[in-house]
Image (cartoon, rainbow, N blue to C red; front, side, top):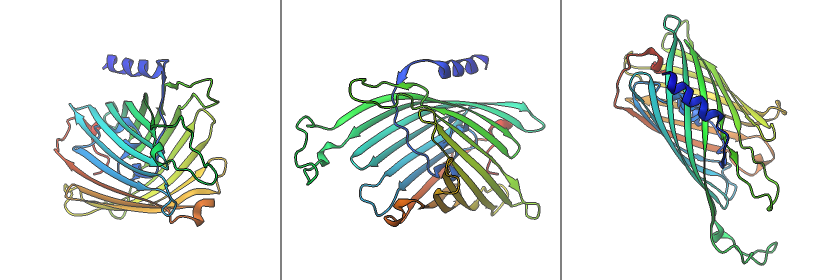
Length: 326
């Protein structure tokens, strides 16, 4: 165990160079899939969990961002978990694909008060490409640069690392993403070489006093980029209702998310409702976000669908990997 923890911190502190173009987080993590946020959640739960997301941003705007992603994680042994995530992202004439391989280890801090500590790390491989075949002459650019003759692409890799603390229904995770610096060409212009960004995700699951089948879950998600110190915050609230037998795992939920820039707290970027259902290990969720800025008059919002399945059930002997969903 000691060797595992030492290895994780050595990876965090390794000085090197890499490249990664960060993919923005929307509300995928709120579809009962915290593994989107942090590798520390890998293996928490009793099943192999698979979630597929489809996201279309700013519907109505030509060549607006469009993203598909897949997340899968499962437990190995009693206290460890592994996971993988893949994504395909299109934004105008840019194309980006990537895969993450994650590992997490979970510890018991105090058995009786249900305090747990988890460490996680991810290795990321990314491919970024400019789709030059779509470049066509127009009024502003009647001639295409003759040197742009094929699709320009670059492959890169990086690391993420995080820690997660849980105490009964309370959870707090801290993550450092894109730990390695980015290689740049000093002769082609100025660009940030530091893509490191920090994420904090914290919340509390509150059982209803009047109805034991109901839970409330307020949460906060914070992200800050080290290069220019810009940051955003999500304030979320969810209602969850369990149905069927106590051991069926069926439930439905509804919630709302509010995102803003931290230097413009009263000017939200996105605001929208969401809802989901788990039935017989099959999962479905939908999220809608209204864009509240200058683009609001040109699009009908951002839409996201999540579908998933849980299978290969295997209960762990360690409470530190108990599913947060009862």
